[in-house]
Image (cartoon, rainbow, N blue to C red; front, side, top):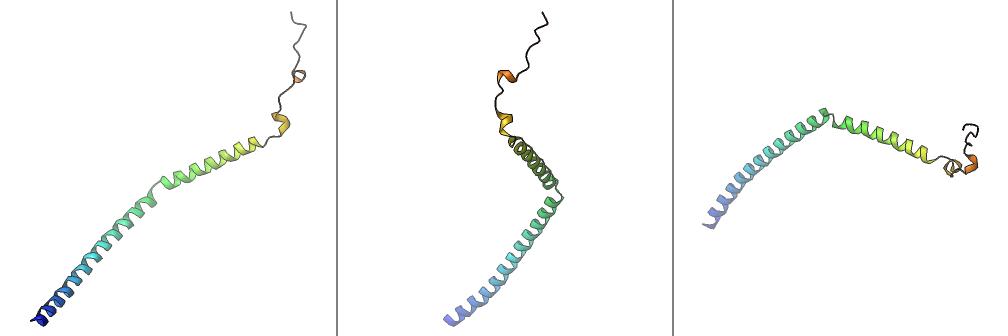
Length: 92
């Protein structure tokens, strides 16, 4: 009797295994389709192009700021009063 029970389980297990395999294959196939659809949607999106444009703008701005910061130190020193133009004393 135990042999009969074991063989029935084995057949049932084989059938269940095939059903599980089919189930997971369908799940994987559906997820693959969803992923492909999402990748297609993202490739058509303008977001990547906008990100690239903003990255270029920011890099240009960084270069401008760095160039401005590299000015010679003599331009950064405060001016003395003698260096300022004198007021015209002929005007009353």
